[in-house]
Length: 168
Length: 266
Image (cartoon, rainbow over all chains, first blue to last red; front, top):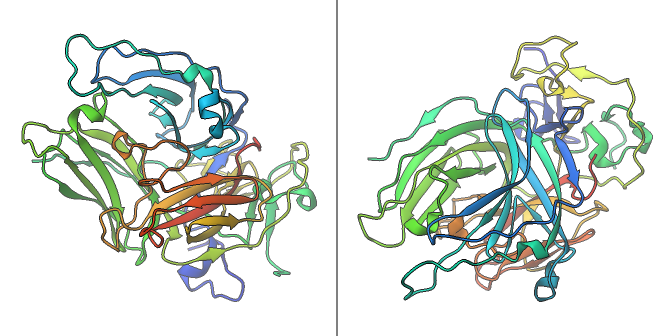
């Protein structure tokens, strides 16, 4: 076996728990020269649109951002977000950061990848009030009152096998 | 202070001007190795909680992992009153599902996703040295590549995809700054930028050996940044984390701080 190992200062490379790097394992990393870029800073993410719900059982979804990742597997994606503008009633969000997903009232913003594309998605999540009946109300998210800045990393985590679970 | 070792900056960034996040490899810092990445797909679930083993990692410690997924219908899980939970012990990753209703006819939707396991020991505190933030330089045409043993495609040194190499100056490694308990109050850091932080719940079922990094599940009812159960949560700031942990949960959460800034593209 040929490779390189580095251990923590004063520790032995023979102790796997002390390694800070080994070429025997793939490292979590992001391609800095990919086109389209795999490391985005989106400033600002587009103004979020307003969605309405036609059913209590559906999540209304829109793609805020979408591009081909051109990788031979479904990659992991990490999303960092900060709120740069918000309505008065939620101004405590301004200047705060979130990772992976941000829930702003009834909306959820997160990144997601399939075999071809990377997305930043905006889901609208609505639960009807108890005791309701008749047609579902049409309501708006209010998400258009927020501006979000996002940083997206497309990482090299990937499938190494296939497991199909079927519950009884 | 370490006075020896190896440090490699990204292509085009002079090493003497490279901030921590611009360094591809630095032997003062621990890199993040991928131990396993395994997909899973389920049918609709039964109403009673079920435990399913997803994989054996056999690390001997509880590792950090993540489990992004979506349900197979695209519909809100709330309509099926289900929950999903991923947990780890020192040898395996488990998936737990069930519903809240106790009604046999209500079967939570199946989900489609994958589990990534990283060689981050969540039972051991870790802290690496900090390097100050400096200005970035322009990219250039020089660099290095190191062929590893786990490349995903056959290639040679001329391969254009830097992810195929164990180290490449065109692929940034995700370094670990700190692993530590998450207690209430102010947690200072010295990274000079607001970093990526991932949270770990060591006690999702009041069972001390279980750990999970929470996925964006409808049933978790997150409101705001890095929210945990109840009123517990974390806000990331440029020099510190502001943490609130529910009384009784003071020893429940741990965190991993990574070497990457939120508001800088490089």
